[in-house]
Image (cartoon, rainbow, N blue to C red; front, side):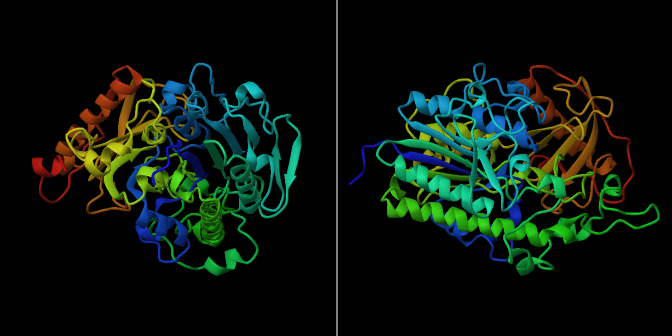
Length: 477
């Protein structure tokens, strides 16, 4: 018998997790069995992307369903004005839900690196979090702050400690519908040591194991030389910091997958699994200093493609969705799946349109065929991606944290059909000018729609190339 109660909603939010950490995306290490099983039995958004590959801006996008330039959070260290930009917590609370937040917030005042004052908590009721979890805690020293801004130290490895807190919240809130976000730091690096500290014994399991093809082929970015401890005459290591860090990185993801399984087990034991929607999502990926001098902040798949799985409620048995989905589509998805109104301020669309009978003129046939990304902090850039092509531009004269630019230069063009790991940049090739022109028009349209102005995009210097000119049919793929 179908329950008349509103579904609970849990957001299982990781940090800096590559899309290809899943077996469903080709990872052979077997580190995400719980997530892969959920992807098979629930709804797997196979082509999902962040719209801003930086921690704070991505979190603002997920909370509000709008882009970074719309929230004003275009870089880390900028407070999200939640009176001007209501969050998911505000919308769920208005719909009769209890709300709770556990973990990393990263949207409070810059001067409050640790605790978050009440007016900056985005409307969440229950609160056990830190503004900068990487600064308040370490792998085996999990420190968060409660509603009274009191320091709370939780026992265990940080992933486990936060998961224990989440399960306690679920158990205590089970009699009324709840909306809970659990925001982990893992598999993000621990800043003060520049390391990926997995649980004891987990790094050793995966050190020297599988390396994603982009990391196996690319040298470290020249700008990472100093941080990698290289002398001026040394060659740049293949994979940037990957061989140093991948063992710990994969180990952290393994423990996250176990935590995800524990939360789903807890829901099942409380007979809430059918009535609870669980969203697994991350903020951005990780390229291990191959694309620039650090770990993200680029237009490449390793930065912007993310793992996303939904289970429970309408998502059970939803299968694999192939349409291109943006991070800004997830807030309206959660609200719509809970039967709550989606505010007009949200710019994305609910993926419930792509499930079952929704695959109609109102669903898949009218779904956008590209995704848009805004890049900041390392460079000021923009990118648009279709199923086959990726096109990126940058403004070398803008400050990386500027909200807008009036002039960009073409910097990236990739054929993802033949080069899925983006090892050959086609920008400027005469053979691919038709593609670049079409993608430029797409990008300008997106910028106009989202940012409200029309910048100039300067063509990259032309490079001759052997081979045929790309056909118009290929341009539109």
